[in-house]
Image (tube, rainbow, N blue to C red; front, top):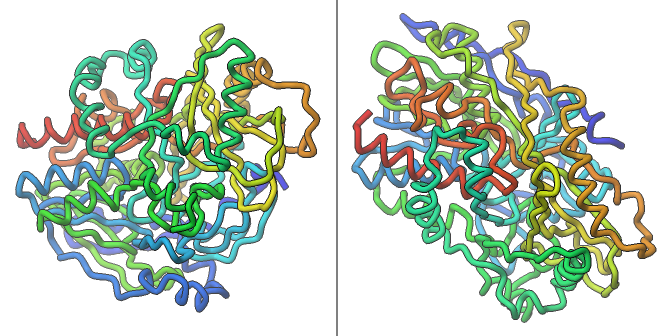
Amino acid sequence: MDRRGFIKGAGLAATMLGFAGSTFAAAAAAAARPEDYGPSPRSPVYRTLVPEIFAPLPDPPDHVPAIVIGSGFGAAITALRLAQSGTQVAVLERGSRWPNDPGRNIFATDTIPDGRGFWYRTTFTGVNRIPVQIDPFGGVLDVSSYQGGIEVWRGACVGGGSVVFTGVMTEPEQRFFDHVFGGVVDYREMHDVYYPRVRQMLRLSPIPNDIYNSFAFTHARVWDEQVRAAGYSPQRIDSSWNWDVIRAELTGRSLPSATAGCSNLGNSNGAKFDLNQNYLRYAEDTGCTHIYPGHRVDAIAKDADRYTVAVTKLAPTGEVLGIRTLTCDKLFLAAGSVGTSELLVRARATGALPNLNEHIGEGWGSNGDVALARPATALAIGTQGTPSASRILDEAGTPVSLENWYIPGTTPFDIGIVASLGIVLDDTRGRFVYNPTDGSVDLQWPPDGAAGYLARAQEVNNKLSCDCPSPNRAILEPDASFTPHPLGGAVIGRATDAYGRVRGYRGLYVMDGAAVPGSSGTVNPSLTISALAERNIEAIIRSGE
C-alpha cells in the first residue's frame, strides 16, 4: 500500500453560518468534518485510558480582544507575549489537550497506532512501510494527502507540532536563511536576539553523553560511525527533550517512550519539553490567556471593525457539540501552514476578506524533506531511541543536510536499519486553490515536485551506505511523498508585510509556518518559526498595529 493512494478523507462539505450585514455566510464553508466518519468503535477504551480529554470543554466568550487560531509554536509564542502586554487572549485549538503521566500509556505507539494517534483517519502507512488500519478518532496527528502525490503531517492537539515532532531545533546557516527569505528578515537580528530567546525558553541542548552512550542509542552511534567513514564530521543537534525524563526511562522509573521509538504520536511521560510545559503554561499563568480545545475554526471574515470567526465545537469522538460565531478586535492566524492558508484562501474566494492580495495561497513548500534509510553496520538487540543525535551538511551540489533519525517502533528487536531525514535547499513550490463546488481548499503540488530534491538526498545517502546485508531491503528506498514540515502559503513580505501583518487588513496577522517561504534552509523549521514569531509579535505589540 502506497501513501500516494490514500483517499484524502471525508469530503469537504459546506456549513453555512449567517451573520447579519456581512458576507460571513459565504465565508463559512467548513473544513473536513470528523463527524462524517461516525463514532470510533474504541471510544470507550480511550475514555478509560485518557479520561481527561473527555471532560466538558469550556466555551470562549462571544467577544475577545484577541483570538489566536492554533496552539503550535507561533500560536503559543503569540499568546504569551500578548498576555504579558495585558491583552486578553483566546486560543482556539481543534484538537484535545492531552495529559502526561510516566505511569500511563496516554498516546498510541508509533508502530501499533490506534485512533489516539491520528486525526480522523482510517488507514496509515508510516516510514516503516507497514500499512495499518486506524479507527477514526480525534488523535494528535493530522495526515492529509493532496494531488501531486504529497502527504502532509501536522499536529492536531494543544501544543500542535511540539507534541508530534522529534524535538530537533536547529538554526540555519546565514547563506541559506538569506536565500530563503531574500532580505525580508534580517538574519543577524534573528541570530543575535530571537534564536537565543527561543533556545532559552525551550531549554534546548544536545543529547548528553551518558544517554548517547546508552543501549537505546546504539543506532545513533552507528550512524555517526558511518558518516565519519564517508569523510563527514557529525555535528550534535540541539533538541527540546527533557533528558532527566529519558534517564528515568533508562533506569525503569518511567514507562519507556522516547527510548522505545515513540515520538510522532506523542510521548506519554512528557519526555519532550513541549509547549504545554512552557509557552502555553506561562501564557495561562498570566491570567490573560485561555485555551479552548475542541474548537475547530471553519471560516474567518471582517464585519465593520471586528473580525468574525466561525467555530465548531467537537468532542474527541467527532460529535458536534455546537456551532458559534465569535468576534475579536485582532485575529492572529497560527493554524499551521495548511490551516492558515486554507482560512485565508477561502476568505478571499468567498468575498469574506476581499482585499487579500494575489500572494495568498502561494509559495508553499515541503522543506525539501526526504526519508532515507540504509543498512546498519552492526546489530544490537533492542529498539531505537527517538532524539536525534547528529547531522551532517553536504554542499558538493545543492545543499542538503542529513539528520540522524530513528525507525519508529516498539518491536523487541533491531531491524538492521539506520535512518536519516534529508532536508534539501529546494525551491519547488505549490499553491492552495479554492474549489467553489464544495467550499474546499486543496493543495496543488507538481506531480514530479519531489524528483530533484529526492535524487539529491539519495546521492548523499549513497555515500554513506555500507555493503552490509539487510533483512529489510523493502524500506531502504528514499521517500519524498510526505512532509512533516509544511511551509508557506502566506509568505512574509508578500502576503504580509515584513512582520506578519496581512496586507489589506489592519489587525490580521500570520504568525506561523505559513509565513516561511517554503523552506527553512536545510534544517527543521520549528526554531525558525518560533524565532520569527518572537520577532514579529514584539514589533506588533510595540507599534500597536
